[in-house]
Length: 134
Image (cartoon, rainbow, N blue to C red; front, side, top):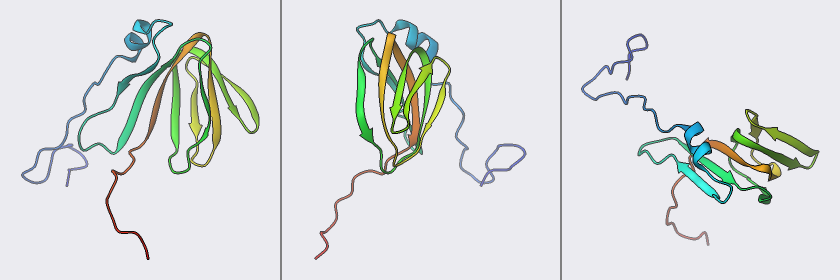
């Protein structure tokens, strides 16, 4: 257990330390128009979250899909684009923070300068091998 006021462990174990992981502005700036896909992924062991910095080049998109289990936060780091949902199209200029609730249907499209964004969500549990119900 950790002391609420000191941030130090109350036992023999050591408390984890905050860490700077990457410079998202530098990642976005280094991504040219031809760069696509994940530029960075959270990979630290013992984490409870998953996070990615993703680049969509101009004119590219993430097709319509539904995430049944996880809420996702999406933060536009650079460029712009549009989020399309059942209630219409929503602009995504740089700096926009969007909540994508679990069960929602959506697609993303990059604007003329491409779209670089950070997603954060609860980590998916690992696959387990079990028996089939009879």
